[in-house]
Length: 59
Image (cartoon, rainbow, N blue to C red; front, top):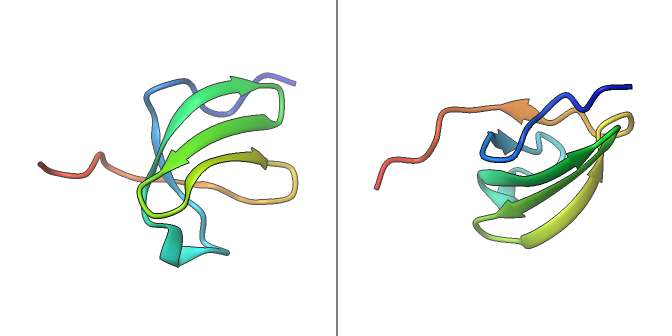
């Protein structure tokens, strides 16, 4: 399975909206490492958690 995201993409976890937006750090298969603004680095299995693509935050 190809990774659904690539490093640099911005996403949100709809199951954890308080984490804020996150930037994808790496993506290998269904395992995506995301650095969230309010939750830090998290390893997400996108087969279990439907990450939602978003626009990058404005500075």
